[in-house]
Image (cartoon, rainbow, N blue to C red; front, top):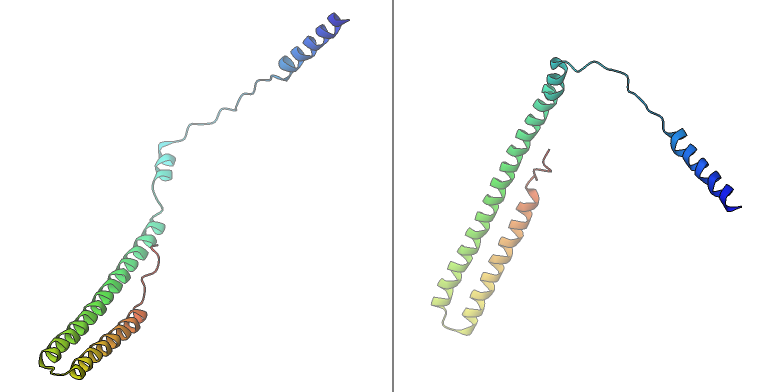
Length: 132
């Protein structure tokens, strides 16, 4: 009984392997011409020009943003340096603890005002946005 089952299983397996194997051939197509290959490789001029102009506009906006931020930061540094110089002058001339306390409060006030002006100026700077 085992022999017929083995022969049947072998025969079914062989039919599945050999019967299911079919060969497929692709239809012949013409080789692409040189003109079509070069057309595929070259970028579209309108898309490239559009992107290039957008990139140049973004770079100009980025440079304007950097210049504005640099100006704001240099103005802030000048204000802090002026407050510090005024403080040094006031401390050198101070004779009492009250005079020194007034000099410290004047410096704190000047620096706080400089910080507020800097934050407002940085909010007014127009960001360049993401790169195109």
